[in-house]
Image 1 (tube, rainbow, N blue to C red):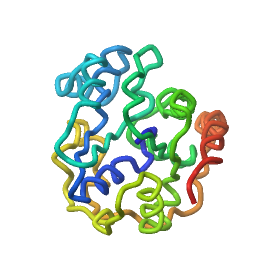
Image 2 (image 1 turned 120 degrees about the vertical axis):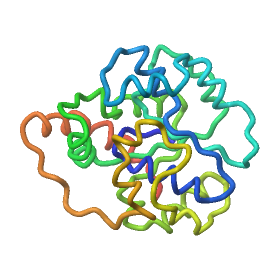
Image 3 (image 1 turned 30 degrees about the vertical axis):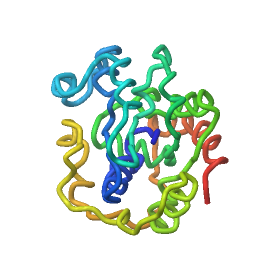
Length: 228
């Protein structure tokens, strides 16, 4: 599952974990990304200490056998650097979780000030979509508006059985959460299911509005392929 930050990605990980037949992994390339780029993120030292920093080792772990029938991998698109080998991607099914840039930026800015386009994953998501020859695209707004219906469509597209267990999960987080959950996951930790349909788009001004305008073409290009 490829998304940028603040795209409903953690709730989707919890949804799949609640199936009972699925192993989940939370942003496995995060430490490798921080180590390679030197980017300063909240809890940087803790993230670096918590995960493997060698992207090849991480990739190998993602295509190694697991005991569960389904292996759900939550990936941030900006964590996958274009200079790294993508050969492991030939062995997995790709889903692209998208969200309107205005909503992403408004949410992200509340957790980390002054984001730039590279922080939000839109450019990288489009690159990965092209790199792997496309995939399943699903919009977070559609999921929130109709969780059962959209998750049934997604399961059908993936060729896996639908279960209503995907609609709810225990409050308080999941054992697979990355160490960074303490900073980023407060809202989803308080949840036991998907929030309702989103309201009007946030009104952005200044640099944030410019950032949304820059991201829109990539969002719209993938949105043209979304399941409905």
